Image (cartoon, rainbow, N blue to C red):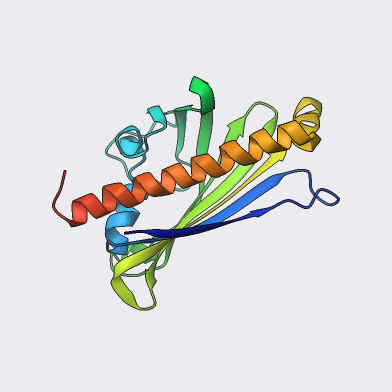
Length: 188
């Protein structure tokens, strides 16, 4: 069983953006969870809202993710909407290549017309117990165009952005946990 909590921040006087941070305990070793996170090519099989993924930086499917790796991802949103984003790996702390060293962190930026976003996913052992782990996700979305700023500052726009962003983070974390725990229990 997984436990999760999330925190939302919005400081409208200083920042018109949106941010969410969430922590989820997963009953699987951190190495198993980490492998799900950095296997971007399998994201349509792991993340229920991802329909397709295509590398666009010239790297091949079997190539490991590195800083600078870029891909295009199409997701289903709320009410059957679809959106495609360009994602770039901006930082990668993989424990110096040591498979047993944690925490590990994967950071990205995404490009969606009118907005900029950044996020990170980290995996760490739970209080020294590496038979289970915490998945920590943080995500921030910042408007870049006038239309986006109007959307972000309107009550209806904020409600929609808050609802959909939190839902995406929660869904992704639940999907990663489910895939990791199923593999841990020998299920497919």
